[in-house]
Image (cartoon, rainbow, N blue to C red; front, side):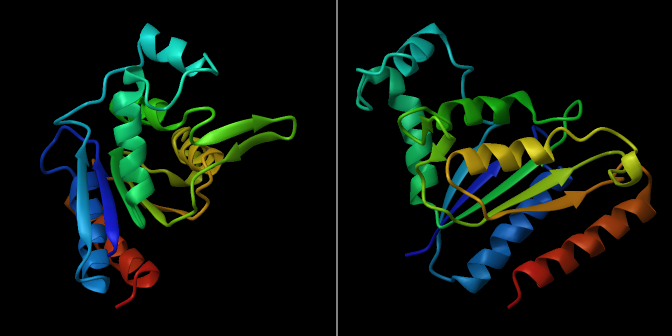
Length: 198
C-alpha cells in the first residue's frame, strides 16, 4: 500500500503553504487511490527542541536505537521510513525554515541512524523517495529580491539522509495583492499538473 507523509508547518489554518501542500497530497491520492496518509502537523504538535539528554544519547556510540531518549526521534524517523511520498508545506521564516521544522529535522537527521559519517563525507541510510516541498513567501523570490537560505538547506538535509528526489513548488509574492495571489494559485496548479499528471 502507498503511504504519504504530509508535514504541515504554518500555524495559520488557512495558509497558502497548507492549502497548496494539501492540493499536492490530494493529487497523489488521486494517483494512488488506496494511499494511507500520515499527518504530521508541526504547528498543532510541535516537536521539542533537542535537549541535553538527546544530545548525549546521539553522541554516545554505544547507545542503541531502543534507548528511551530516542523515542520521539524513532517515531518521526519511522514515519519517514514508511512513506513512499513526502509532502511538506512550509512558509519561509526570516529567510529560512520555521523553528518547528528545524526541530523535526534535528530529530530525523541522526548519525548512525539516518546517516553515517565517513572520511569521504556523510552517507545517507534511508531509501530515496519523492519529496514535494511547498514553500510560501510574502515577497518575491526571483531576481535576488530577498535571500533564500531555505531551498539549498532543505535539499542538503534530505541528501544527507539519502533522499535526492526533492522537488520545490515556490509560492511567492503572496503579500502583493489579489492579482499576485491568483497568479500563484494558477502557477501552483500548473506545477502540480506538470509534476504529477493524471
